[in-house]
Length: 302
Image 1: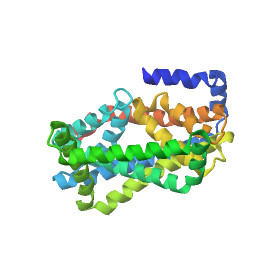
Image 2: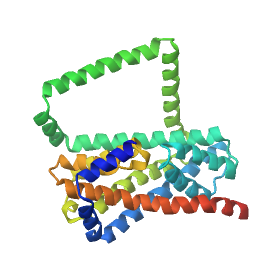
Image 3: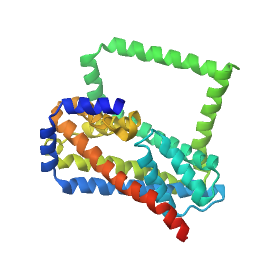
Image 4: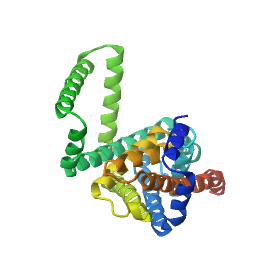
């Protein structure tokens, strides 16, 4: 329902005829280049998964890993995060890895991605601190922002002490969950191919940013965006994917919200969001669908 509402909202900001005109006039050379970088990121993700499976005593065949990754993305368009369950199930059915172990590697993988995403946010805040501070100080009372930040720190500190010392069921569960997250992160540095894993993790996110960046060249109005707009637009769009099924409806709205900070017109902002989302979604539908069809055929042959 949220995705449908956001689709309606984004289309209320630009007429369908105008959106179609942007699609017709877009430079598809850059769109295809963005698709290429997106494909590289997915292939790298599939290869990275092999490094996490090997310590479990199994050898993951690369074709199965590729098809499982694309199937994951496709299934996530139906039910949020159901793709991860599908991916672990594929691993169990075709590679014999116990479900809980395979799912554990996926959780650890997501933790690594989250760490990189937080790093991108930190770098963005560092590089564009003056701009971001000026933007918020002009629209919000700086003293209220500082007071709110102090309040959050105090609340966070009290919650940390509660979780650390309390023996209540909630505190024990939270403590266990956090310990599991930390253990998952540290396990990355204990694996045999940890540097290859770290390289692929950075490569995946580098391709994500490059995919977003080169696609902005497809529309003249977004072809000369400042670095701040690229980074903030990318971060906003990335979070939108988690907000709805694969970013349906939310992706163009998130791009529009980010680009509006830099006084970029709403029509090209929303049009770029739709072009970016549609091109990547089309790739996932095609390759994800083919993966689901070919998976049993490939494994029956092998």
